[in-house]
Image (cartoon, rainbow, N blue to C red):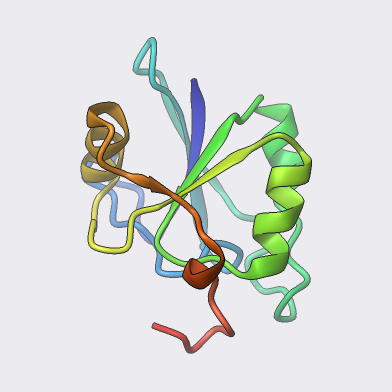
Length: 122
């Protein structure tokens, strides 16, 4: 499975996850089967609230799931409409922890109450 994870830092599996999905400076694209990892800049990180559009990048990388700490309702809807599952990793801080939680089955799928209400929700 190819997963996307919003990141603050680029330190491989020790990279720090970003609190907010759309304004993340980086995204990790991870293949959970092969272990392949690619970290890329988010060219749209400085967007106006509610106007992020990383789905174009996600489709190029064949993303099947997103692991994130915070995400808005519209982003959740857009991802789900594109067939991408969304998982919440609020208590986790690194890419390695998030991938481990997904692999062990302890990460939960996003629910309506998990959606952020704005950039200052954390």
